[in-house]
Length: 64
Image 1: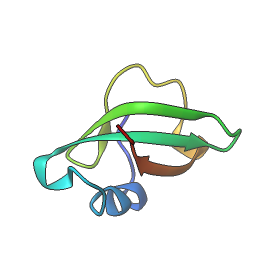
Image 2: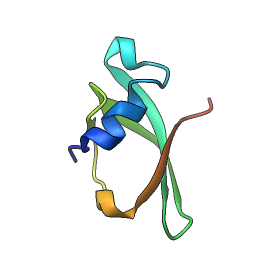
Image 3: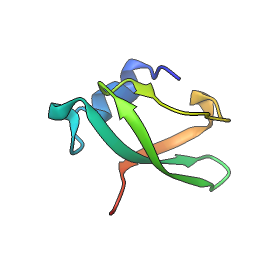
Image 4: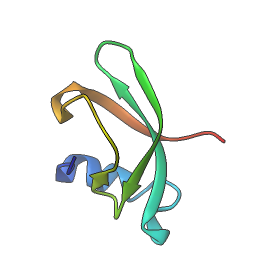
């Protein structure tokens, strides 16, 4: 899924942005937290994602 500029700006300030690959947790409006998703170049969430950008309330760096 390609993210809008709103989320790209946020991801630019999270760890890994300078490397072009980040591991993030996505928090959805229904309270679900989807952990350890890969994001490339601060804009593309990889893998099978079963939510839309409208469902996202926050994106944070994954804790290892």
